[in-house]
Length: 137
Image 1 (cartoon, rainbow, N blue to C red):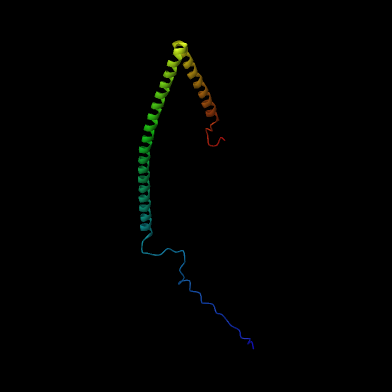
Image 2: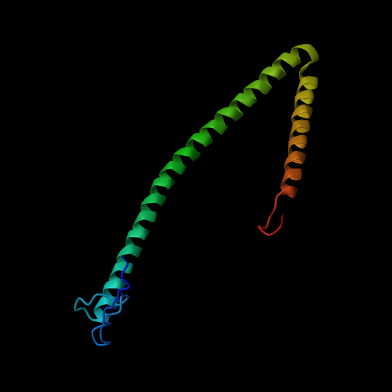
């Protein structure tokens, strides 16, 4: 029932070395190496110019936004200082009614100096804890 026939599979003949084309060889489009290198240099130059223009525009936009932020911050500081002066003068007027002008001025000046000293000490302590070098941790 089963025939003992042998099936032989033949391999395809391999191409001659002269006919073989390496798979990683670039496609030959007739350009010389020098021309390809000059095209590459031109592309790199164009890319560099585009990058420079991009960062120039980005910097100008950021500078405009930074100027606006600094202007708003400056106005806020001026208004805040004005409010603090108004508060101090109001407290001085109220206290001078009860304690007299000299005692009220001394009390407000002493209080302001005490708050300033406490805040400066806090700032100095935190400044000493800051890492000054990226490697120091």
